[in-house]
Amino acid sequence: MRLLSTRELADALGVSESSLKRWVDSGKISASRTEGGHRRIQLSEAMRFIRDTRTPLARPELLDLPELSAARASGEDRLASFLRDGNTMGARGWLMARYLEGATIAELADGPIRDAMAGLGELWHHDEGGVFVEHRGTDVCLQAVAQIRSMIPKVATTAAIALGGGPAGDPYLLSTQLAAMVVTEAGMRAVNLGPDTPAGAFAHAVAEHQPKLVWISITAALAPARALSMSRWLDTLPATTTIVIGGQQSRALSKLPARAVRATSMADLAAVVSALLKRPRSS
Ligand code: B12
Image (tube, protein in one colour):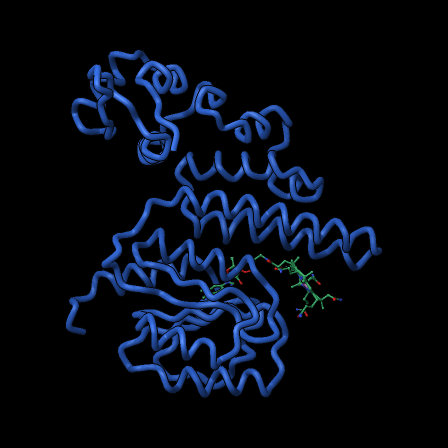
């Protein structure tokens, strides 16, 4: 991970170096010291500070984040345009800029990501050219989302586990990846089994990880036999496991344990996790 000097970060933020040193010395920014006593700041810590304090970046190029400059230079102001054009740098920079401005993962998922992907989904109705643009744009979006995932602060190794994925026959990657990021941001350790996961594989994973929360994301139309096997498996989960079901086709699971929460957004998932983490440990 890159280390920044106080001068580099001060210039990137457009503040004086003395202000920056003061922030380090007062503990607002964590830093290490070189053998010669100079303060050094990890790039991830600089990004945490920028995000928490909503400090605008005056010169992003100084932080070696070329994607931010690429998004700015393009003049585009919609994620959808970058996805449609297959512009990976632009999409990464656009999403990173919103994240650094303080948007939560749930806000990004329920807003620009969902909207931009829905726009891509309209293209295949028109011609096969639309299909290729949809496929290319999905990959661009996945890359941009993965980069944000790497920027989310790490959760303690002792934190409670949330485990989830999509059912067998469902190929959709983004929604369950975003769910994993939402639970991490809310303070749980995420185990994402990804899409197309049979109920039997979920059962093994739950036995190994003993999660406090299980999320299921369903986007594809689910064959009745597969829906039934998921419902049967959910019934076997301990009563202490919180269950959250979401996604465009979540109604395919018509039979659910009474305690399962049906959610329509990532904001709902974040709220369930927050409430769960506030509960006393014994419950
Ligand atoms: C990308 C994509 C694909 C890709 C998937 C790539 C991949 N590996 O991920 C590919 C090319 C494989 C694909 C295939 C098909 N697709 Co498609 N696809 C999409 C597209 C464009 C984006 C889906 C997506 O990732 N969205 C981004 C996520 C973040 O948004 P979201 O799904 O809305 O999720 C939000 C909420 O539902 C909620 N949520 C989701 N999961 C969870 C989980 C929890 C726990 C919680 C709390 C909340 C939650 O939060 C999210 C953020 O707000 C959609 C368009 C659309 N409107 O979504 C079509 C779409 C889903 N596909 C569609 C179709 C028709 C197909 C195909 C049948 C096309 C074909 N002729 O082959 C196949 C079927 C595949 C299958 N086996 O079922 C239709 C479905 C129509 C319908 N309802 O019947 C759509 C809606 C496109 C359209 N407008 O017609 N597709």
